[in-house]
Image (cartoon, rainbow, N blue to C red; front, side, top):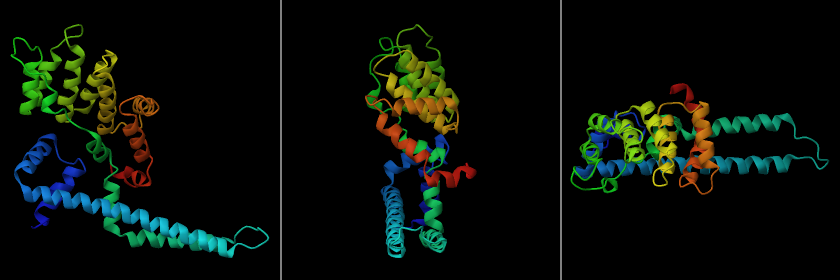
Length: 264
């Protein structure tokens, strides 16, 4: 297997750099191309190895520093000389160099807005759509458009369900997903917000989480709206997406996140 022919596309797919249409085409090719699936698995495995190596190297270096400080600390309890601090900083620089340029760049790319969004977002499965003749199923035309990947048609249909109409909240929920697939993140965030505001138990928490992801994809992580929403989800123990929100908060505060902010 020639990994070089796949690497760039896999890297773009995993970091969220592909357009919605190209991403959908890539996923369709995955279903038919066993070699591409194998290459994707190897890419992800390599990423896990790099992350683990980074963690192991830093932990070992920290233990070395702690032992050195313990050995050089005077019995009187006086402050350790500045010289040791300089040694520690020099060692830290050495560890960073040993990790290598590739590992550093790879880890950084995993913390961009688009990469984080791609890691958390899950589009609704076809099984989530209710089936039935169009005459009996008021949202069936929109569902069929989603299943075909016709995002524009799905958006047009779900937008036509006015507030107060039957299943308005559900229509807004799927409008949000259609907009996400089309890369229209602001529209998606607004649709999910309207859905959540209806207070329907089946959709409210899903809509809140997807609203947060839409704002993330739109690069609005510094806005008060995003911060308030993510914090509320993370601090609600009974929320279905509390654990994911807490994990996202940690990633947004990561060292690697800081390394890529200027590149976003």
